[in-house]
Image 1 (cartoon, rainbow, N blue to C red):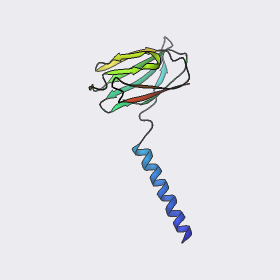
Image 2 (tube, helix red, strand yellow):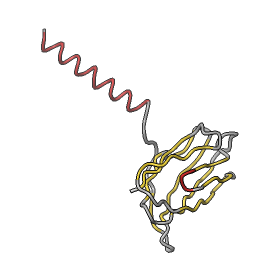
Image 3 (spheres, helix red, strand yellow):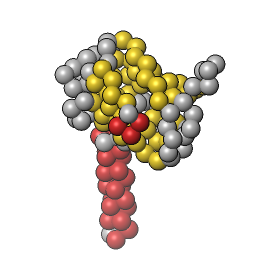
Length: 125
């Protein structure tokens, strides 16, 4: 009986962990970073009414970034993109938008919509 209870508790724990991972993902989408001929890091992200995809982006410190933001759907919230740490505050238009900046510090940097309701992160290595 005691072994059965332990087995059941382990199964319940696994179900809870998987459920949390599915319902509350920390990362969504694929990581897409490459270098172009001008030595910019190319970082791709799309935006719609539900947020940023992917919402966690990776970049190298001290290498210029060419952030390709594909706006699929504009809303009152997502028309502005702010990355305060690097002085980025741009008005987005539907379609492809390009944002340039150079990350100078390692660590995590938050970006958000102009209303600070939709968020994402750059992880700078």
